[in-house]
Image (cartoon, rainbow, N blue to C red; front, side, top):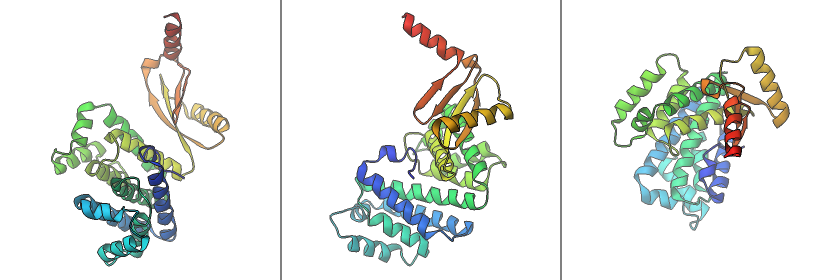
Length: 280
């Protein structure tokens, strides 16, 4: 199991290290309730904050030339008495791994912190709703360049950005969605806030062992059409498929379906574009 998007930005060593850290999260929180998982999230983010502020410490804990015992011992002395056993286990797994860059250690801690929130939502039976809200919020932000720039601007007022986010979410969003979005705006991972939100939606889908198919259609699909399409895609890809639906009148007719990097363009507009390229 891999974290979508994040791994694409990591070199081989950091990819393996992230997987090791995520595995430890699963082991250490196997019996944890949602409240315990929320605590793990907050504490991992707090550790990441410390490592962000202290570059020498960050490099020391990510330095694979130092022994694993030294790195684990330092992490235990600094954080062990301030965090739960589960959090300490995850931090220990992270610092004992080999990272391509010290900065990847911080990114991984934040990624695993967000995954802990998704596990919490899953155990509360709210993961489907969180996934859908993250996807929709990502699309809203991505469609508004000025909003995207504001939320991603590290020099903008932090409280002001959070107020903008609260207005976008209003009172309808799940608490987990609100917290994940707030964390992402406070500590962006990747090139844009919209991409970060979509990556979190993908991570939520992955927790349900499904792939995400983004489906654009000129009009809204009926429930029966959605069921048939999901069934067809499941047979094609041989795994469960979650549909994320968008209405886009520009495609004229048919569907445009994207699963990962693969695009199936069955729209009239797509066929016309292809014909134009051939004639050109």
